[in-house]
Length: 282
Image 1 (cartoon, helix red, strand yellow):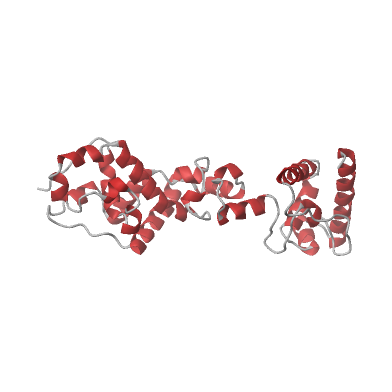
Image 2: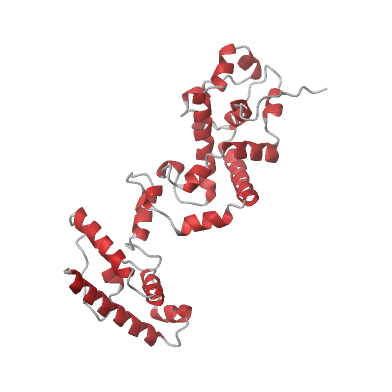
């Protein structure tokens, strides 16, 4: 008759199988996890390890290590380390009980399977690609089971700068470029002024990219305040223009019969912008 091991639901012991699933290139970054004996016999022979596994240090390290494996499969750019604790996805990546449950459900690798190994069996390090595939399936299944899909879509469409660590990383630069309209999917844009500028118009000039940061912030705030004065339809025209859509495409998307109506609205937005500049004393 097989032995059934029992422990409290919130015991860190339940996460021990995840520690032995970590690839070497991941576990080597964590001092406590990297020193775990690689056999159950050696683990049981060292009473001190029982205390270590129940410690906060073990829990912190296993949470962080598994979160780094889970995060990339949420479909957001970059790595977990690029994001701050304010990011909802960063927090979801630390759902350790769900990852432990998912791995056991998918591969049968849980506490019972771990403790059933022969005492002298040397547990090998797992193949990084195999672990990546396992975590990919586990994260995708968990998102579906927990109903996180709609929430993640909202987070993806409405990011906040507070979600990102203030490091000089490509993922944060990409966010800032999109958030402040300094890059679009189809055309290169730098500012609200430029995106309103047509081929035959030179009403506005581009700001100096090397200018004072205070001026840049003030300019971004000014653009946000101006956009708040626009009607919903004018705002839609402006946003589509920023994203690089042609006048014909904008007309089609917003239900205008011809693109000339869009041109007229763009001209009206320009005039409104110039008037707003003058009234604001810029």
